[in-house]
Structure formats: C-alpha cells, structure tokens
Length: 345
Image (cartoon, rainbow, N blue to C red; front, top):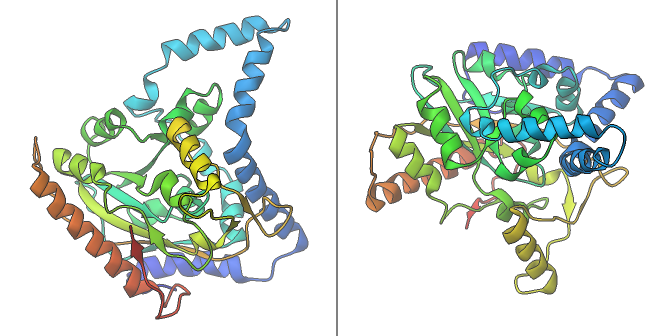
C-alpha cells in the first residue's frame, strides 16, 4: 500500500483490498479474465468493427438504419468537443469491478483536490493500453468519487476515435472526450468547477517505450497541456501508474530500424502507434500484475490569458520535478526497488 492517504482513504482502499485478496473461486477468476479480455478486444477492434458494420449495412436491406445513423452522425459531429454526454452509464458497469480485481488496480490519494477548482491530471506512463488510467478515471470501480468528493474526472483520448460510428457513442457514455484544444477548453471553462481533465501526456510515442522494468515518460518537449492549464487557471496534478509497463511484453525496435520507421510513419498518419505485444495468456490477456495509480499533490497555476513561453517553461519544469518526486516517494511501497529510476525524455 502506498503511503500518504488519510484515514478515510485507507478505509476505502482496505475495503477494496479485502475484496481482492480473499480467495477467489474459479468462476470469479473466469469472470475477471473475460472482463479484461472484452476490454482489450474493444480497445483493439471495436472501433474498426463498428465502422465496417455500418458500411456493410449500406449494401443490405437494412440500409435505412445505416443512412439514418450517418445523418445523426453529421448532426452530432461537434458533441464530443462540447463536453460529450453528461450521461455516464458505461462507467458504472459491474464489468469494470471485475477488471479491477484481475490485476488488481488501486487508486491512491496523496492530497485533497478542492472541488471549487479545475485541474489537469497528467497520467504516466501510457503503457500499451493505459489500464490504470482507464480503470481509475473512466470507470467508478476504483472509488475516484469517494476519494475526491465533488471532483469529476474526464479521461481525454485520441480525437479520431470520436469519428468512428457507434464506437463514439460507446466511449461518450463512459464520459470520455477528445484530447483536443476545443474539447479541453470546454471542460475547463463551460462545465463549472470541480473538473479534472485526465491526459495521458506521453501518448503514442510513450507506448512504443513500454516494456517490463522500464520507467520512461515522454514529456520534455510536451508543453501544450501546461499552456492550456495557464490559459484557464487549472492546477496541474502529476499521476503515476506503477505496474502499467509490466502488463504486456513488447517487441521494441531500435531507433532508425525499419520496424521503428514503419511505426513512426503509422503514428504520424493515424495518430497512434501499432505496438507488437503479447500478454500472458491467449496473447491478448495481460499479466496479472498489480497496478497502483498514485495521484500527486496539485501544483497551483495562475490564470494567464496569453501565457509567455517563460511561464510555460517554468510550470513545465515544476511539473516534471513534482512527477519525479512522486515516483521516488512511492516506488518502493508500490513494488519497485530503491534502484529504479524515472527517465524523462
């Protein structure tokens, strides 16, 4: 258990841990595995499958359904960047509790977040699929609402996913929004206070560096989130998911190799990187490694209509220092040895 949370948080986490550490039945283990498998397959294939289905229906007797949907898609095109849907049905599904228990995944609080302020949470590392970030901030299974009362977490993800038919409605029902300037600006300016926008800062580039035993984050030259924080006066909060990089084995191509050049080309065109990875069972099922997502202390950020480069650099440096401090303070209690280092590139 990581240090730094108060008695109420200890009570919540103790309750979660008690439920996860008691002896599991074979049925429970099966349900957990199926829950994780559906998430992995959805991550990899659901968006493409939905797109193929809707195009296919155009050439069948059900073409009116597909036509009506595409009309709806055009009319609803801007909704994701205007806060998405307030209805968050998918977040409360029981399946996410089973997924949490599979690893297990825990959310740890080290400081309060004032519900009268807005925040940008930088989540690190990306890993292959950001299991910790998704489970803790896009579902209700890890108790975010109880740990941070009055604060609403919104995970922002690749904007292109909100252009995929049917899949966009599914992820909006989970409360997710695009990681774009208009989307984040809306969440920080038009949705009142108590908003925590969660950004996986390293993105696709960081996923290519994900491998067991490696703690590398890509952010030295990623300053856009700091500029947005200054523009809207949103405090910055570092988050680190210990164990995220241990969930899959990945083939990592060296810089300049044909494999890496193809990955970089695909990332440039599509916005995400095609990782070659394998899990513990049936290729897609990740290793049952505990993931502990630790939320750090907020960094107070002033509101600047037009922040200067010097201001951006200053708060970016403060953020990197806070992230490194968070990592080193909690690495041992979260399963790493004292010798582990955080590499920021």
